[in-house]
Image 1 (cartoon, rainbow, N blue to C red):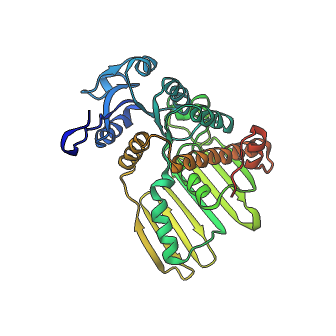
Image 2 (cartoon, helix red, strand yellow):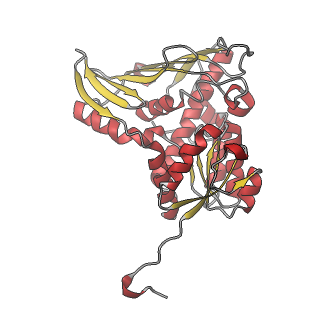
Length: 346
């Protein structure tokens, strides 16, 4: 029956389950509740004493997925758990929001996307590039930065304790590159596409006091070579002061500098030609986008492009790790051919 006086029936909020690390559950719970189209219905993962006090709690994540009557699942977990729980969710027809990376390897990442695209669900992986793309595009238009010839990525962060999943190859798949350096690498792929070749070295040199070495790398250096002679240099470390996450992208006459909160474009003389602030509302924007894509009825083109970019980022990471093992230059495009996955056009 149609509503009288052209009124429409309010749409039911999507029922959301949350599985996250204890230190992240508060921020994610607030972001979910901040979206009018989402309702935080259940949670699992941390001990009950660390969970949100006013949300029903499950001691078994898979039981929550199977019996929680959920429309969507929000995951901020180890890479291995994210892959496994995401796969369980889509089998139950539940939409998935996840933190990157897509998988611990290129093969795993392509399998995740292949399975997700076979189901009528939205499978969304957080994209830092999507959050700042408009800011960067506006800055480039304002200053005439059309192409980038040299990029520099510098990442240094506090490393995880030995008991953290980030220290485990099985749970994480990699260390500082796959975690703290992931966002700058995704931005590099968005700006310049896949390189033709990679030469890299990684190592384990730092360790928390009184603990053994981590399984995952705490130091990584890579040189990326692009068609036409372009280059990129990547350096990422744990437990090496000063802590920072910054990338610089040099064109013929100007340089774009990006940090987590700030962007600037300067000329060869060092004078700033454009300056801006990157919005700090990433989680709020992410939840609004996730809900809107679900309610739109089909995955948007932007969503498909984001997953393709995450696959490319994982290919780059795999090539870096492979080069570190072989001591030889490696090509991320070769992984596409081996896996039988369509190569990016750019």
